[in-house]
Image 1 (cartoon, rainbow, N blue to C red):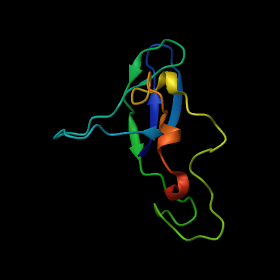
Image 2: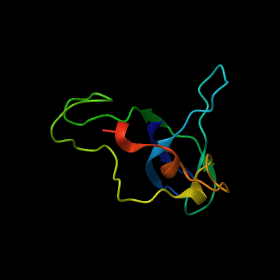
Image 3: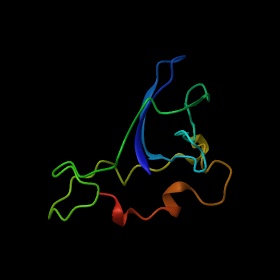
Length: 101
């Protein structure tokens, strides 16, 4: 799981997602596309980074107070996700956030 930045060139919409997944079994890095919420076209992230603590910059840390790179209160948009669209379980219910800092 990575953090990705997206940009729709058609309607100029930009968004970020903590649900960027790589498709395994490929020699090159291929991501599940996410749909633009306005024009419903699929896009790969233009930039990807690890989900990390903003205090110590580690992926897994022991900082007493953690600033999250993601907003856990914001719901995952399953209908726009290329990985879990049309499936019973969405990405946010199949991934444990105890490792995300």
